Length: 337
Image (tube, rainbow, N blue to C red):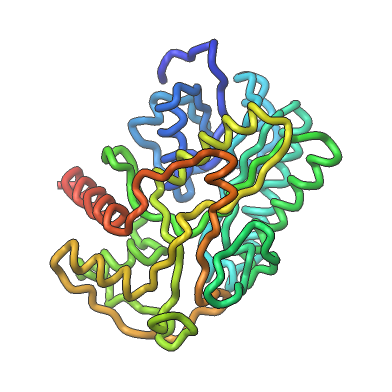
């Protein structure tokens, strides 16, 4: 653990050993913040950079532990990433998602209020929107009616933050993620999942032959080539937006909600073709029926985010996203030899 700098703020990051939370921990450390991590390690992993933090293994449901951490480290800002993220699993096991995501967030927020936390940044999702009009980018004013329990579990937490802001003055920042991919450009962090749930990771595994051919869910959807269209954002750009949002909340008195994406969509087949071009290998794939609870096309309108935070993405091409994923995989394989 590095020596704490008493002149800068200490941030509590829940889920800070996970894919997105870990990358945000790196961005906070790069920006000079002190960081305390709370993670139950159910899906996360302790990495070398966690030596620069104070690390607690535990759940956000443990209010006594959370309150102890807040008091001991004089926490004033929380970034909340802890939770479950698989859409299909949420359909088959909804109560897990309402427990891990909604109830866990409620208990964390309650502890935050009791201990005088000033700012709370929440990791939300574009899944809160549900169906969107064909060909239209999604703004923050779009109707929110999720198609799956995962989206509902996140939307319920958003509602809690709005209500406690009115009742108790807790300032919140909500970021609705689109499809996060890629790995740290310096090779310090990435995904460790043995069975990735997102397209790029699954496609890479299929290309390597370590899993069966990739299943493309739907080939006659109302999109330009019949396959699902999503807005893919590099994890390092996404993490940097959290640091920008923290600075914004510290400078302003109001709360904020933003879409976090690039504002451009790619189809499943376009992603597969790009991976094949970069790697020089084929991605074996088959077509399956569309998955329950997923919209055909979801692309962000990020105008508000760029205008208010001045956020400037650095790695906003699918080539950079895929190349960083392949580089990370090569690093992992090299370390396992």
